[in-house]
Image 1 (cartoon, rainbow, N blue to C red):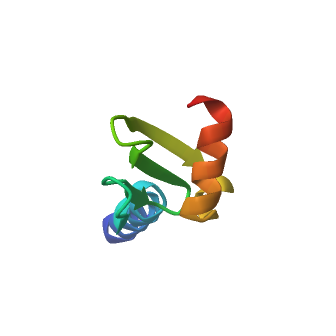
Image 2 (image 1 turned 30 degrees about the vertical axis):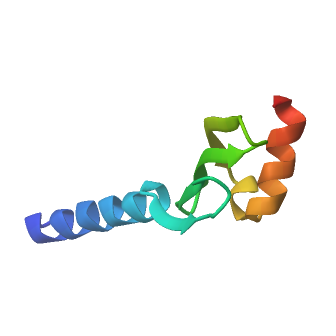
Length: 84
């Protein structure tokens, strides 16, 4: 294989890996400051939710495929079930 072809193949593989695994900021919510970061294979949610006047729920959760395509509300319901 020619050197140029190898470089192109390696570049394409790295580009595909970057698209699949590099998260992009996708939202900030007015619930206390929750932020979401999404890649094609997972979603990171940095929860900062006002539970009541004195308490804030703070945690970082990772949701893998296929949960990464669920809405913020569905993920919050899942998080509450998991143990607030």
